[in-house]
Image (tube, rainbow over all chains, first blue to last red; front, top):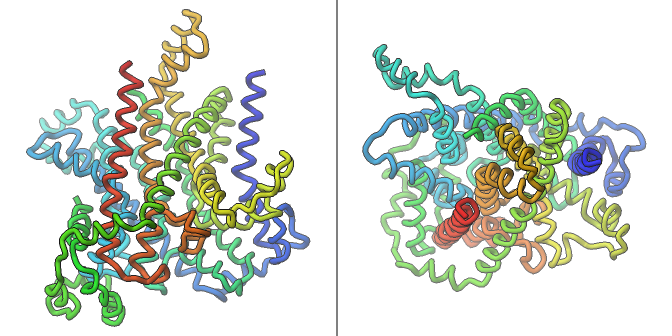
Length: 268
Length: 307
C-alpha cells in the first residue's frame, strides 16, 4: 500500500518533469499554429524544416554558438576543478599562516553571487582588455568558493598516513597532490559536471561580456524568440532540444560516479 | 581570492559620480574590435578611456543613498526575497517527500527516476521559460487546462496578472531544482548507517520519532547545503525572468528581480541609464542581505540540531 502511494507520487512528478520536454521535442516538428495549442502533443505531420534551417545557419550561426558554449563551459569546468581541488587540498591537509582568513574569503565568495558582481566585473574586464572574448568568461569562471568548500570536505576524508608516506618518500606537495588525485576521481567528476552545467546555463555574464558574434547558446536562444516573431517557433524548439543534448549525455555518463561521490560525502 | 578584485573595484566604482564613467562603453566598443585572447592589454595608460579614470570624481556615499531612496530597488529586493523564500519553502519539503518515496524502490529503477526528475535542472533556464511561456501559461495553456479549470477555478492569466507573476517564477524555480535536491537527499538517505534503522525497529519507534531522531539529524546538513544553494541561486537568477519578461520587470514591475534591476540600471536594453556606479552600489547592497539570510539559516541549524 505504501509502495503504491509512493509510486503514484513519483509517477506524477516524473510526468510533470518530462512531459514538457517531450512536448518541446515534438514541437520542433510543428507549425506555429500547432505550437500555440499547448494541449496538442503530436504534430499533424513531422516537418524537419526547423532542423534544416538551424543547421544551414539560416537565422543564426548555430554551430559557432554551440561550439563556443562548449568551449567556454568545458574549459571553465576543467580549470575550476583543477584549481579549486588543488587549493582545497592545501586547505584540508596543511596549515599555514592566514589559512582561516583565506578560507573565510572562500566562504565570502560563495555568499556573493557572481551575477551580482556583474557590473564591476564588466569594468574589470574592460580594463584587462578581455571584454568581448571567450576568455573574459573563462577567467572569472575558474574561481569558485563552492568548489573549495566541497573539495576541502572531500580531502579531509583522505587518511593522513598517505601523506606521511609521500613525505617519507620525499615527494613535493604538488607531486603528492597529483598522486592523491585519482583517489577522489568521483568527486572531481561530480564537481566538474556541476560547474559545467552552471556555466552552460549562465546567461547574464555572456550577455554583458561577449560580442554579439561569439555569444553562447542561452543568448542565441533568447534571441531566436525576439518580439517580431519573424522566426518560426519550431526553430527555437529545435535549438532548445539540441542544447539539452550535451548536458544530458554528460550527466548520464557520469551519474553513477556522482552518486558515489555524494553518498561518500554524506557519510560522516 | 579572485573575486575580491571585482569587489574592491565595485566599492571603488560605487563611490564615483555617475557622469564621469558614463561614456565608457562606446569608446571601448570602437577600440576593442579585434582583441586576441592572449594579448592582455596591461599597457592601459595609453588607452585614452582609462586616462579618463584619473578624472573620476568621488562622491562619497551619494550612490548608496540614491539607491536606498529608490522605491524600485525595494520592490526588486522584496520580489527577490519572496522568490528565494518561496522556492526554499516549496523545494525542500517536496524533494524530501520525493526522496523518501524513491528510497523505497529498488536500485536501477530508483536511479532512472531520479535522472528523469533532474532533467529540468539540466536544461537551460531560458528553455524552461520558453516552455513555460508556450506550454504552461495562457488561457489554453497546460496549467489552466489540466489543473486550474478541472479544480473549478477561472483560468489564470499567469504572465499578465501582476499577482501571478511571482508565483509563476517561483513555480519555475521549483520545477528546476526539485530533482537536484531530491538527489542530494536520496544520497543522504543511502548514507544513513543501517544500525540506526535497526535500533529504531527494536525500540519500536513511531513515525514522528523516526523523523525527529533519524531523518532530520542525518539529512540536515544536506538540506542546509541545498538552502544555501537556493539562496545564492535565487539572488543571482536572471535568465528565467529575462526570457519570460524580456529584461523588463513585467506588468507593474511585479516580476522585477534584483539582478534584472541592476542590469536595467547599468546597461542599455533596460532603461539605458549607463549608471555604473549606481548599479555597483546596488550590487554591494545585495551582500548584507544574502549574508543575513544565510546567517538566519545557520542559526536555525543550531536550534534544530542542538536541542
